[in-house]
Length: 440
Image (cartoon, rainbow, N blue to C red; front, side):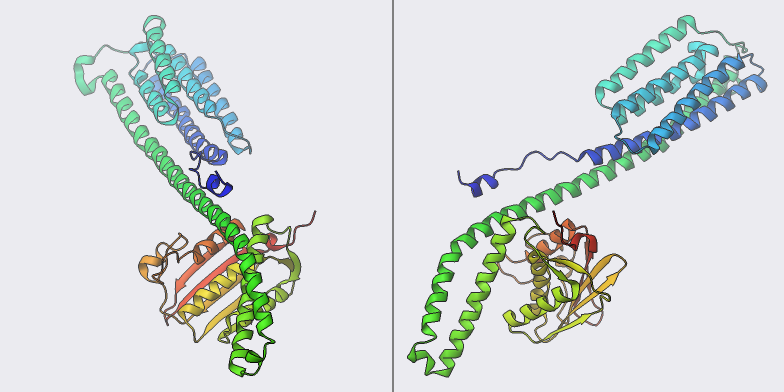
């Protein structure tokens, strides 16, 4: 199998970057920390209400100690969240274990399994089912079951009237009602936030998968272009030699029209050879290693001059508002990216196009404007994807796709809009740090 065929083999299964997984775990840890603060406050209010509102005799010192432990653990969790380090799913599991342990301790001191708030175990198991792997969720269910059985045997009874027959007038029934409402509210609030975080994570993964597919597409096109460039080198050199011989033959020198056409053909062959050399250079070396040094003004003046000469177009209006000059890499990839935009604009608006260069803070702004018909709505919504074109030709639509990916690789962005007066505008924003020539 050839190297090109090997490159076209199916890609490996996509695995999200570690940073994405860590970010999701961090968001879930933040939700648990917020829930733990609410739990500590809720425990404090419940203890005070039962002690002084219902006349229950509770071991306040011991129960306040349990709240203190929960608060101290949550402070450590808060500090951990603020530290820039990798977040582990095991930390979520440990956090839920601590929550379950402090709940068991408080229930042990306030009625054991007869305490109506024993159903808060369901909230913790439900959170584990959403946030953790199945093995951790099942482990917490086992721990919750064991805790309930232990509370049924060893829990300290609480001195409350046995008034279950009073219905809603019963203290126990009121406690169960409060527990039910509390479980429902917390589940709705936090599960909704967790699901929203999960959806954001899935959307981000979908974007990364799309980007990986696009980069794989570019890599395949690069391999095909490199192979084609190697193949085209010999016939282009042969044509150049033949045209050079024809240029001095009497049959052509005696006819001004034929002589002019020979010169035009030589110019176009020279352009083809330059393009082929650029493809081979880009395929063989990484960006910046083969780049020369130029200033911003020199780079764009050279680009505009070459583009006008090779396209034979004089309709380009060039405006340079960059200001104080600075050194950058004279990179053929960036030059080809901007040339692609100019080519597209020329095809849409042969009579007039504009290239404007400016600066905003630490970014280079490149704006290409035309007076064509603009982008169709269907194409506009899918700009930056391969083969999205209004030209109606097979294989077209790669120009803007390559522009979007080159700019994104450099850390910049592309803004495209249709103008109210007609035509379209494409603006590139490139960080100047990414354009500086890198030296060993």
